[in-house]
Image (cartoon, rainbow, N blue to C red; front, side):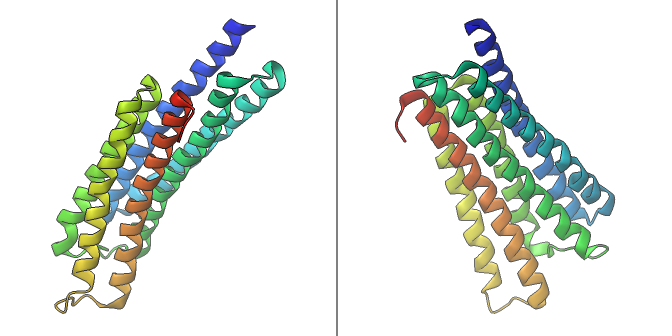
Amino acid sequence: MRDAFHDDLSSITDDLVEMTRMTGAAIERATRALLDADQHLAESVIAADDDLDEMRRAVDNLVVDLLARQQPVATDLRSVITAMQMASDIERMGDLARHIAKVARRRHPEHAIPDELREVITSMMEAAVHLAKSTGTAISTRDVNAAMTIEGADDAMDALHRRIFGHLLDDTWKHGTEAAVDITLVSRYYERFGDHAVSVANRIIYLVTGRY
């Protein structure tokens, strides 16, 4: 029974890591759709989010099954409950990638991102992909030090978010209100993507140490 329990925990961990890989791919593809005004790519990102949702449901179902069959306590209980919480955060990261793709779809055939902001948005995408990859590594290894670096990486995302607002508030802004609203939303989606990665990192730290 114990071997089966730990096999199931290992399977859950593998699913969580795969979910982080999927979110990293989704945020990268959504950004490409945004920058290139690629409607087909945007649609594919939106459709693929269903796969991530299904994986989250599978993790939740396995967690409930483990709770019912194994009635874990102490560290084992912490592992199971934390896994469900992490799955929720990672699934939300995928939702944010979908939101970015929806902005690209809504503005098609126009480009949602003005030329002067393309570099910042690209940097936000790169930061998000890095956060997704780092989160997957921390989940896989349960490395507290690796988890702690995620918050520092998120600081870089926050700085990029502030740069966006610097452009929007500048007197030279010439792209109108609609573009400003879209860019504000997009920037917020990237920033929240990073926040959810930090939330997962904090749960890993709690899982290993018992302390937030």
